[in-house]
Amino acid sequence: MGIRLAETADRTAVEAIVRAAYEPWVPVIGMEPLPLCADYGALISAERVYVLENGEVDALIVLQAEDGVLLVENVAVRPDRQGRGLGRRLMAFAEFRARSLEVPALSLYTNEKMTLNIGLYKSLGYRETGREVIDGRHIVHMRKAL
Image 1 (cartoon, one colour):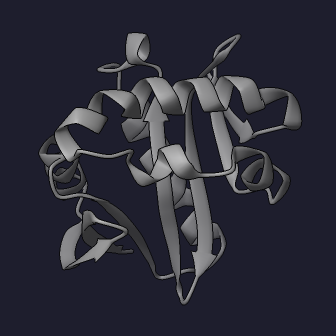
Image 2 (cartoon, one colour):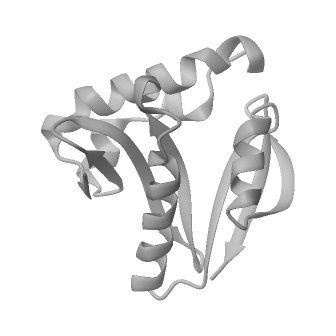
């Protein structure tokens, strides 16, 4: 299994994984989570999407360097591949990228109703730094110093 920058040819798989991973949250949140609203063609062109593959794309992570941190904008794993540590592997990759960019911290945000995700991020060393409402979505901001 390798992690590489996504290519234009990966767009369909990336969008399908994001949809499959986040659609179950729509009834919980009452609207689409922010990752479902993203333009993955533009994100791939901007070299912000990395895919984890093993013959086919199994998972992805979207990263953005900004304001002295590396933002983990989205992590999504194919539902039939969840529970195998792929999300954790992508989060470790994000730390590797941050260190290689000499960025001292990572940040991310998630919906406050995605409590399993919040618990996972806390177990990886992230701490809550604030909350806000973005377009009707209640967001929890988290950060991890390296």
